[in-house]
Length: 237
Image 1 (cartoon, helix red, strand yellow):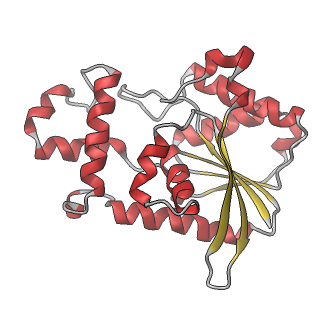
Image 2: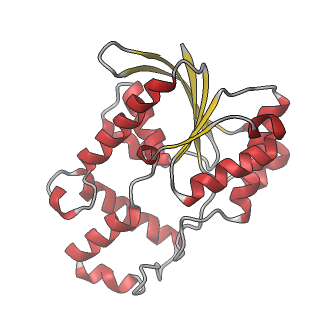
């Protein structure tokens, strides 16, 4: 069996025009995780990442913290591990409820507090997940669910590598965890809300004859690298 470690990217720039960019704290979070993994002498046979800028920046920071040994490991870029487009989902809610549009600048930057942004975000996700408006979204909820499953199917080709690290986002991690635990998949947002930036979750995996991957969740949201003396690095968004 292979051990697959899904890592959530570091803190991005939530509530700004360029969300897809690590903050200084985000870089430090991944650098600290890399240093901890190196200190524990954890090795990885292959690295996989989504194609968003914050995924690349996060993996680079993790490698910087880990050191030269990880620089030699092959990196696979796979867009199926990307996050869903939260801005598109929020814009679609705004189109349906024009009174919300005044809360955002013309470039989509929120003009409200981060807490209010989160409230509207969760409202937007509930509408997206409802299935009643699938044709209004660039990627519908069923399409996102299918894409994350495809990400696991593609990973099947690499399971001969026994230790795999995947740099991804909260949505794919939460959806994968919900599925592994047998929870209703819309519950993934309950899990997602608890995920720490740079936290990691681990799955024991083996290939199934159908082309799928059998996965068992063995840890969720580990984040000791941003606790204790590094607790100032703990963020959720």
